[in-house]
Image (tube, rainbow, N blue to C red):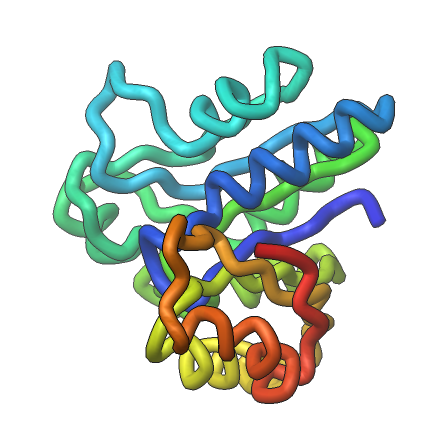
Length: 199
């Protein structure tokens, strides 16, 4: 597969770290890799965003592309509207990913927040871009209490839209995991019907 969409059950749960780890593993295996961030929110013009962080973590061999940047830490649709900047349509995301796939072995498309966060006023989401790309979706989830419900809902949303879930990765494993985190390693595959690919 040349394009993987990396989404999550929410925000600040480790999507960029997971994206970077996949990129680093692919580079180590001799593959050329690009990371596409369709919409970066909450970052100023000169600050490094998630795509730059993926390059920092995975190495300079990784190509990074960001399509839009909005200063306020909000959903892309809201952030675009409030800033007066253009929103990012799923067609633009798919076009950019296809372009990168022509010159890279692997393209990782890292979403913003969860799968159904709105990207534009029409209500398009990362799921719409994944459908246009016919790309599998990797779901990143947190470790602790509450993750089973959000993972199950995300998996249901994938199925309802005819998208293929690649698996679930726990995006940030605690140094001292509590009981819920430990139990979730066994329970996440059951409730999501997706394989647990790592933590």
